[in-house]
Length: 216
Image (cartoon, rainbow, N blue to C red; front, side, top):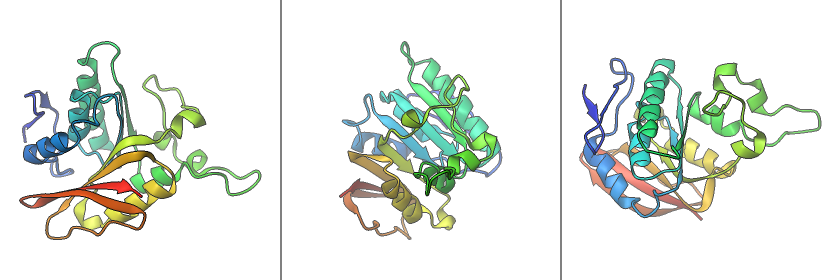
């Protein structure tokens, strides 16, 4: 499969059928809907796959991208794509982090300690799931806990994770007040927004539907 950004740049593709890259038509629609919010934003991509949607965000001016992908091989592809796009964005280059981790576990890993002397879940994660900066050094707690302006959520459709991931985003304080969370989901099974979220927009593009949610 040949994977290209809206500007024509070619990206690496995930091996086999391990990921379902967002279609070009859907990507363009999302970029148009978020055009005013993308410049200088902090973008979180949950279940990022090849990283193509996050790469599009970089091209539209995102200042920082964090991309989460569970599959090690796919995460490696996403890292290569995002770092290549970021390197071509001039100085200062946008900050890019790709974290190979389960999205639900990663979102929960920022929860406060449950008691005196307890350990946060992040301290119990395998080394490859701990969050590091681009230079490989561990990030401090304050830096890790900064919320995001825009969050893209496109988990494997059969997994039914749109609702649980969105609830975790709200519960753990991952989104800025006034921020937007975007679902890409199957048109024949669009989930209802969880409590605490309001529907900003919804658009259907063939078999894919894009849903924009805002925290109440």
